[in-house]
Length: 131
Length: 131
Length: 131
Length: 131
Image (cartoon, each protein chain N blue to C red):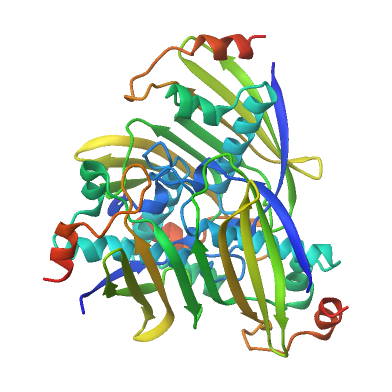
């Protein structure tokens, strides 16, 4: 099962008045992890959009918040490709701090073309993901 | 089952280069709906935090994205209190555009005090929610 | 001098751990005020982009923060068209709370076409703005 | 004149439907550069807030947008401490891509204590900044 890990620092802008990371930012971090996951496999997601007009919107997103994260925390996000079907991808995530799980989550995605129509997982992507 | 509906306009800042609302913003709208849900019942959530040092962080969040939303769309968010247990609240949401569902989701919450410790649902809140 | 006023409520997501609105959000509010300014004059900015491929990116933005704004504050934003030259628009803003100025600012803008090239202020817009 | 440089990748969440970085995000990047500027001098800004209840809110922010930035661009932000007076700090910024300036800007800041009162630049900070 392919996976990738990124690290990031919590931005001041990501905190809220409770003094912790506001809960929608975890989804932004999931996305950064996906971008870097693809890059680690030699796939440039930004080119996929620009050159092939292939897009990978989110169909579902879930996050379970286990421990608060704070400004300037060094955080790692582990992303795992859990499933690569004919029409969708399914990713799982762990957000870690100091070796402990701060949040877990998942996203599912379907590929669409430039007209917004669903398309099968492109062959080049399937090849890379199943390599 | 108590519920409340708000309307909002999609901000330019909420779009992404796919031309649609970026997927983490739906969670921000869920929160606005919760604030207004509480206000509609006579409960000022901001005072709860400020005066009573009672907080309602998110334990879980889920969103299913069914149709894209775009800049300047007039959107409504319906929030329903689905469950008010001894220690947690569970909300469901529908994000609607032109009478059609664009996204659905839920959040669960546990109350904590100023020290970050879990506390039972405060009596005053339980009274309002079960009225 | 044309102007328009909008009101909004500070979102939880807009606060930071200092307990006040994070400083980049004021620029997002400026934008909302511009959208509604145009609408008040009968101009649908979203259509301008979609149907005419005319865009109005920001060339400069400035904000002076005078008083903190907090979660759930009812805030008004006044936008004034200060200058509409041949190639650029210049807007001024006041962000008000309880009748007092919380922030002031300005933005300047140049029109571009779908290829990203600068274009003169479109005639239809000039007509509306100088009406 | 002390300065520091950071690099970052443009996040998908930071783009808008014009296909470029939305204009308020540059201010968030300025902040990240300030945090790392302080860290490069041995000053942990997060501790300053947490342990000393000293805060450095933004009094003014300005940005001039010269060239669009796009998703996944590798961007560097150079921050320079331009002035450290008795009561305020003044920073200048260059946002660079491929060796070219994409944006420039500045922020000014005043120190406040836990009660929100303005205080002189703390001695320990002055010492570090003028070292």
